[in-house]
Image (cartoon, rainbow, N blue to C red; front, top):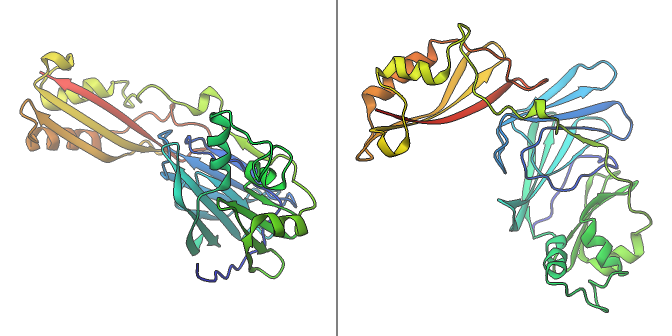
Length: 307
């Protein structure tokens, strides 16, 4: 693997991988900065959303990253650097996970890494075959590496991969300092496993809109589409047209279509109906009551059958 120079000073905070599309807030070690990563859809593994870095006391936005960071995340002491490690897709571990570093909101560097050692441990535990000896035994240091594959001590960032291989980054000198046998290096450098991370997931029901927004006049999306197409919504079994629609609704009530497809019974696009629905949606303002608190927008999706 190429030498990776990293201009950052990590803080002692890390999180278990999250691939469920939950918005969250984390605070850096000094308490001076806060990272809020807000997804606008709960689809798994999505990157749709925005990440804000704020001064904790002033609550001023220092900068933003035009993406939701779903995975392992760390924020530097000075608030300028964000590390984002993605290790799985659709619940399955990636053979080559990816780590990206942002500096002041811009991508500084990105590199592919191996699969985390924790996935090997999960496979063994699932088979109920935890060995009595070897690197996966319950009291081994490598077992600790597998249960804490991405963690930070006072001056070192450790990421442990299968083989087992350990990568270490020096936070003070700000560059990659070690790749090698995980057990030996871990034995020499290990002195603590940090406390649970200070990451607050947004799990309240108010963050999970399940309905579709009404127009400002109180009309439903279903009725809006019926009026635009001069057709009625019906059951799938008797529908002559299928409408798939998705739009981002911002805080000002203005929708932005991200998907609009209308297919007839033969599976061919009905461009005339698509254009009618498009004009109707794009010229209508919607109520923003369903957008979760603190979120700048939300992605609403629906499927209808028309006759």
